[in-house]
Length: 535
Ligand code: NG1
Ligand code: ZN
Image 1 (cartoon, protein in one colour):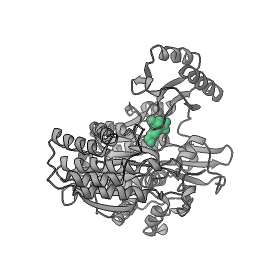
Image 2 (cartoon, helix red, strand yellow):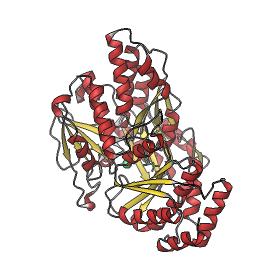
Image 3 (cartoon, helix red, strand yellow):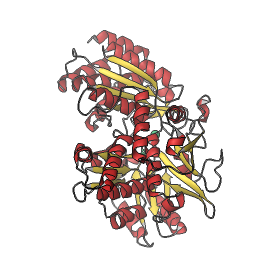
Image 4 (cartoon, protein in one colour):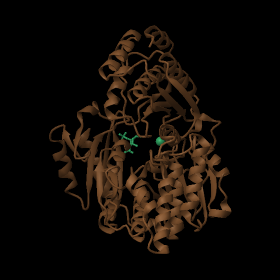
């Protein structure tokens, strides 16, 4: 590898000095103006990562998801479509913070040496970006970094985040028994639509679904998918709204999954009518939130917890119907932000185990892998269902003892194709929800009445130094500052059915306080009291 070539390329894409950059839960994410040099350097890390993994393709996704339009971000996808291995996050941080071009290359070569990476071997990187215009500059920086390191590079241009994860896995499994799908964007649509038809097994979806696409990449991509879908066959009528990607400034503006979840209301425009079934995607189409306007009670949200409970109950029923009772371990993975009522419903009503992990899907994904079927969702709507190779094999090879067993096995098998196995995928999850509602013949009211959420409040607290807040027990308790947790416990004890915790955000410079209690006013009061404790 040519040291001078890397230095010359790096000079074209310098980082903005005087800042400390950190590879966090969402990779590097910040104002797009600061990201050109960061993206160049992420390219260097991807060049090392692909070579460390014997030339398998590595993905680079450029997106800032639900953040404002002026932001952007860059993150690395590992060969099977999962998030970058944790140990490498620190290498990414070190590379990006190198104080000069020379020190950057020194660190790059030293890292290759330490990790026993042969820099003369070949490497492959693929990239995708959301609809943010700033993505174009960032992709150029990435391309230059891969050219300077002689790394084969394919730019897939505009994609949803889950599509990039899908493509990465497809490339690395092509021609093997675990081949994940055709290596193309249309391969993704074809796989989903075929699996959607198979999952329904002749049942019909009832009523129409309006999809708010946050004016992001999910809009055009969902429209592509729908070109391959016949509403007559499935019964699903989709209305796509907020799919304007020609005005970048309206991305995530008063719409999208994050807006709906955090504001606990429907997008103001267009306005859902009573009885309508709606869902919202976020800016890169990896989060999904459902909602409807109950004609009597108004807006009702079905968030990630509801999607997880719906999926877990359906899949557990199917496994029983398939005669797989006790053969496959099914579990649900949540974070501390999951509503306590959902956890209780899963453990007591569905009789399934629940695992709580720290925030960030990489933790949930990892925990889900220890089950044969692992359902994981963050309350904000990011999640998926993972099927182990054993589970998939069982669906395919088990001899059905009755037509009902065959039906259940075929549906399970189809679901394993429908549900994105690499990462949470709003479009795939949406089709899954539609399949389940069709099979259960459930309306939104039926789904909404499975359990009653505990009133809850999430507060953002500006603190001097968020790093002082350290947690244990999957972020449910503060270990530092000393004494802080005792104060929180004291407050919680004063309320019925209450729970509260505080933690430093991994994506923002602030602490978050979550509280839930038996009534709205108690939840609000508790959240405010804990916020004062933390401040
Ligand atoms: P932080 O900022 O660490 O709370 C937020 C979300 C996470 C996750 C990440 C990555 C909440 C409370 N937190 O993390 O669930 O989605 O962003 O995007 O929603
Ligand atoms: Zn997202």
